[in-house]
Length: 178
View 1 (cartoon, rainbow, N blue to C red):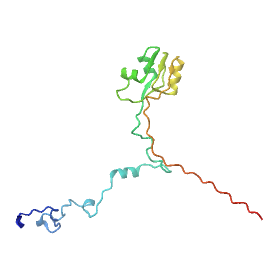
View 2 (view 1 turned 30 degrees about the vertical axis):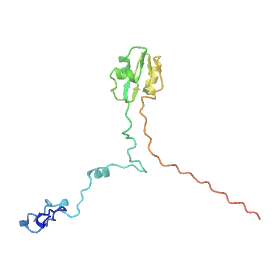
View 3 (view 1 turned 90 degrees about the horizontal axis):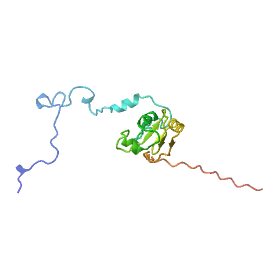
C-alpha cells in the first residue's frame, strides 16, 4: 500500500515566486532578462513581415494588391528560340517535346516548352509545343508547319469563384381601370 512519503507529484511544478530579493535567485529582473519591451507584462513583438507589407506601396481598389499572377501549381514554360532550333536540327526535321528532351533541351520533368522568335531558313514540323506568333511566322516563312499544342501545357487548376448575382426583374404594376 502506498504511503504519503512515497507519493510523487504528477501535476504542474510549483510556481516560482519572483521578485522577492536577490537571495531567492529570482530577484532584480525576475528572470525576464534586461529592460525594454520584452521585460514588460503583456509584451508582444510585431511580426516582421507585417511591417514590410505595411511599407510597400499599395494600389487602389478591391483585390488589386493580391499576387494573382503567382500560381505555384502552374509550371512556367521553357523558352527555346527558333535560332537555337536552326542550329540543332536539319531541314525537314520534326520537332516535338520528346525530341527536345532527347536532345537535352528540356529535363525529364514534363514542363511545357514554348518556341519563341528568331530566324531560320530550314523547314521544321513543330508539334506538342507552344509557339509564339513571331516564331510561327518565321517557321511558316521558311516553309515549315506548326501543329496545335495541347499536351505540353500543364492544365491550370481553376479557383473557386463566387456565383454571379442575378438581377431580379421588376414586376410591372397592374394597370388601373376607372
